[in-house]
Length: 117
Image: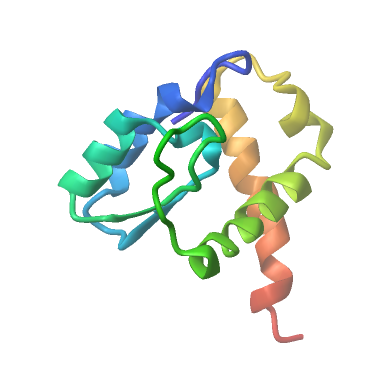
């Protein structure tokens, strides 16, 4: 799900979760996704919510800190993808061409891990 650059990530949660909700065991997200509605949707699908509570939440919800550390890998991937100026600045006019280049950049990052030569 591609959202506008100025939009909050939570706007893309519902479509994304509908696409992957039946194939995952845990949903790892940062504090920005700590909302009761999001937690209810995740729990309704039988998925574990690995989301730390916001600082202003009166009763913090416990989460698996060990699983949350895996989120670092996702952040590192986005950091590496943003080394390509075209990905970081979203110069492409259409979402298809933008997502196509993101796929190409991802493949370029992935090849060293699967190539044996």
